[in-house]
Structures are given as structure tokens and as C-alpha cells.
Amino acid sequence: MKLESKGIENILLRAANWVGDAVMTTPAIRAIRKNFPAARITILAKPWVIPVFQQSPHLDVVMPYEAGGRHRGVPGLIRLVRDVKRRKFDLAILFQNAFEAALLAFAAGIPRRLGYATDGRTALLTDRLYSYRKLKKGHLVDYYLGILGDAGLDLDGRNLELFLSAEEKAHVQGLLARLGVDSAEPLAGLNPGATFGTAKRWLPERFAELSRRLYSEQGYRSLLFGGPGEAQLGRQIAAAADGCAINLCGRTNLREAMALIDTCRLFITNDSGLMHVAAALDKPQLAFIGPTDHIATGPSNPRSRIVRVPGACDLSPCLLEDCPIDHRCMTAITIDLVLTELQALLAESG
Image 1 (cartoon, rainbow, N blue to C red):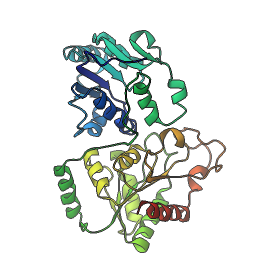
Image 2: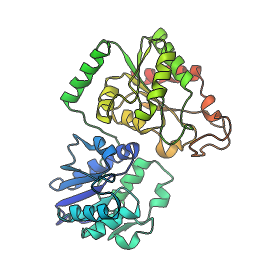
Image 3: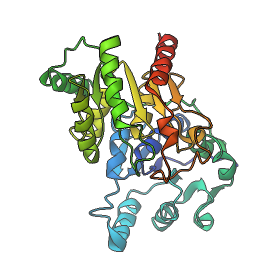
Image 4: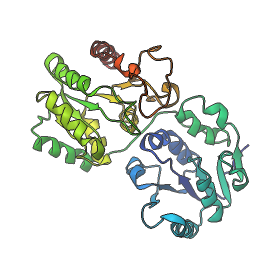
């Protein structure tokens, strides 16, 4: 199938709904701009993933999908259809697989609708792609790029990317100064949380010990990252780290977290959205992956190393939110293993 670019001047992209997934669409977004350099490109996104797309030179408009407000419920969906329809898009490219995404593009009268023919939405698409089962066995970056490749569009590499303004970088330098962090001090970002249960989380006491050893052995002060729901976890780890870690959990928005991660010399994390943020910012990174599929959703960057113990649990990848047994996929990851992997990572990264 070849998607003809003639007459396509106004494009709607339907964003993925989670931060990590949204970051993994950035190579595809860059490629869309490459294929349609003169088009007006709008991305429709839920509020919590909008920060991923801010400052992107490949997008002209970031349109909020206010599912908790203006676009809530059936009346809100009708309002959203009207909001989209009045913008007169020529083409919709659907990164999100949901039936609703295709229904919205169809109901809004967008004449070309490109996406995977899954979730019962085949009849709603004009440009249907059927390779989703095969691509689902690989990495999500390639899954999203497959939408374009199967449509005969040119790709532009697999590199993730995020964009920060000079003002945002200056803002977080001021924030660090107020926290008593010297701008010359080497910083390590630690991300001890993860959404959807506890199974993806390395042990908090090990994060605390790692922070102490990073400081005593290598001189790194640790910054603890996480959302509002992880504020207590951050306080617990910071208290046990004996002044070697600064708790930022629940104290930053996502754009601030991105800019702060950019100040770090390395990042150590559970499988989470911030793992993909660090990969997009090209940070040397260790990522702990146990119950999830490291092939499909591991960090896509050669400067990222996955830390796991193959065979530690026969159930892995179980994809469960909480471990029903003894969390052996994570307890098998020892401090010494992490420090050995870190030494190899830093030697590779230079």
C-alpha cells in the first residue's frame, strides 16, 4: 500500500495514551514531518502526555483531549468530534489502537484514516494495515514506525527525541540551587516507582543503599524521581539514604522532570515512562525489568542497559501488577550486580 501525499495538507495524529508509549512514537512523528514537510500537523493527546510533545519542531499544534473535562462522556465525545471536524483534516494517523480513535476520525469526516486494522475498527479506516500481529512481537518503536512503513512512507531512523527550551533548563538549575545542589556536582537520577502495581519496582531499601554507595564510592548525589503517588516512597528512600539523595517525587511536573533528568550524568530506573524519557534524552541508563517484556518495551537507546536475571522466575514476563509469590525477578537483582553493570555502562558511554 502506498499512501499518496498529494492533497494532504492538514494532518491529525492521535497520540498514544501513556508517557512511555508517547515517547516511543517520536521517531514516527519525525518521519511524518519528513514525508509531509509543508503540512500542518496536529497531535490530539490526553493532558498527561502533552508534555512529551511540547517544543517538538515536527508538530504545529498540540490539541488537548480533555477526557476528564470538556470531552468527558458521550456529550464530551460529541463535542470532541465537532472540535476535530471544524479543523478540516485531510488525513488521520492513529497511533492509538482503540476503536474510539478510529470512530472519532470517521465521525469527524476525515477523508483518509490510517491505522492498524484491529479492535473491530477495520470498516472505519480507509488505509488499513494488517501487520500488527507480527510487529507486536518486536519493539513498540518499530510497531509505531510500521504504520508508516506499511503505508509506503519513508522512515527517519529509530532515535527517540524530546526537546527542552533554554528557559526550562535554566528553571531547573535554579530549582537545584534552591535545594542546595552545586551545579558542578555529579548527579544520578533514580526512579524507584512504577505505575500499575508494585511488581515492576526494585526494592526501596536497595535504592537507598545504591544511593549511599553511589555517593561514597563515586561522588554522585542522587535525585529521586516520581509522581505524586510516589511521594511517600521517595521520602522513605531519602530518609534511608542518609543525605545522599534528594526527594523530588511528587514535587515536579513532567516537563520539569525531563529537564532535571537532562542534568543527570546517569539514570537508574524501574520500567516506567521516565525510563523512555531518559532514553530519549540519551542518558547512560540502567533499567530494571522483571515482570514486563524487555523485548517490546525496553529502553530504545544503545546507552541504556537492561538489568535482569534470566531464569530468576519461570513466570517472567508475567505482566502482573503485583507479584503473587516472592518477587524473585526483582530480588535477584543485587546491589553488586547493579554496580557491576553501571561500571560497564559508564565505560561504554565514555
